[in-house]
Image (cartoon, rainbow, N blue to C red; front, side, top):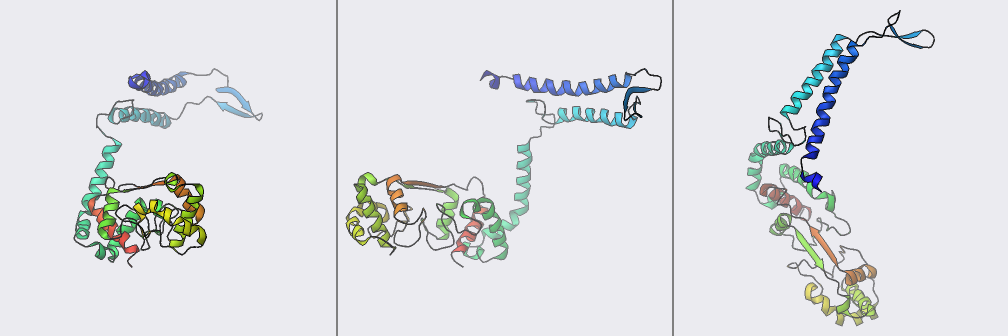
Length: 298
């Protein structure tokens, strides 16, 4: 551990780099001074009977290009970071370069986003220019989970339908994008009762949406559903204040059927939508809100 808190590696890398560059110059000088003595001014190496390696000096233009390259290397290491922890006399950093480019881009885009900020999310969803910007923001920050068409996949909500865990109004969408969400379904098998009781509850949940189920088990599971009703409601229609899904429709975020429901009852589930406020500006979130809202409100 002490190797990582001392300046050993800084010195080690710096010495290796500088010695290597000096060694290149020394090698060039030594080879230029060395001359193999032979009667025909060759090195004595012969291939294919008559191909001789001559002891000709390197072209001067090549030698000077080599020297200039090494000198350039010394100048670069003095100006820019390259020798261990040496920051360089110009103070250049990749982070500083990145921030400068971001600042320039934000300044260039400021008039455009000022126009968008004055528009409602509903208006943004119909504006061709705002839709193009929103599409880029969505592809770079949302499509990895929700898909390029916003239709989601198992475990990732579909943004193009009318089923919303926390509400599909522009304000709720903006809140979700800005702050993120953490949805948690605790394991409730112990509260439900026996494994047989859990199967009964699973079939009752399937019956709420008219999905294929065992009607006898569903009838037995209705009384046990009270454990689930605390979040999903007595009628199973969910609770957007808690992010509890509606169990009476045919939208299944984590899989369909008795086995999928049993897995949720027995193991629970934690899902997280990361907050985007640290990555996007408020103006960008506003445009993205309009773009996402437009998927389900065409």
